[in-house]
Length: 324
Image 1: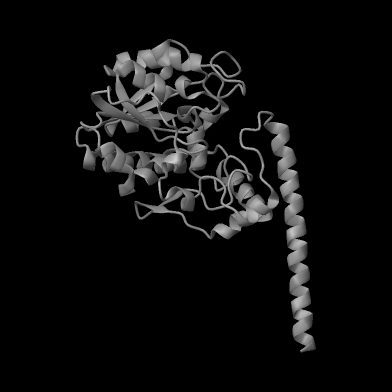
Image 2: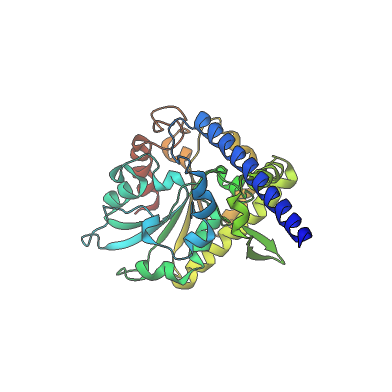
């Protein structure tokens, strides 16, 4: 009996020490976040929330495709008789720090008299699009439209390649579960599943962060792996859509920004391959005659995300280009 008590005491002590150091790592991450993100877009929760709550866009939180996760487009109306458009992407498409009537989706809807379904989410990317399109529930709202959508538009930024191999993104405070990631096994996409409880610990997330850092070094080998995975996710997403809407056209809109260090993730032949596979690739630079700029009127207060002025400049040109 004494031996059992001794073992229990040792276990209890080890657990107490683990959570003490875990809490210290949490406080360190909070301090780093507050230093780097003065606009506090995703403020830290209490430590207890990470242990026992549900935070962020994890596999478990996205599997039901709740409407409350997505941006409501107030320009959608029964008066919009033309076939709808589907949007995917990240915070750029979602409209971070913008009002509803300032977003890409709203302005596209107003100009085209089409309903626009904005299925973009902050800090998400190509893998989330495929995850949604692989879920039959996704098509329920869109299938109720009078006509099938003629276009799907994915707004791309190079950071999306980094996200393909990041277990922790954008930071340790953004979620407390396994996020949507895919691997290629025998030329098939496999959803990467790990126990969610691992991501409730800041010490363990620190280990994953160090692994991510290694996988995201801009080497030819790492970049090629990202290209292969991105290409397959795009291709399979296109196939999923074409099963239901045989005539749909898939547009990748490259949101091109000056001096973007994340361009280093791209392989030089990436876009030629996608074009050969039937994608319509449009560079924003070709539409507006220049690259967008960070920390300018092209961006909101954080100096990064697109401003209303950026969309006012780009959307009419896109509508004309695609004859929407």
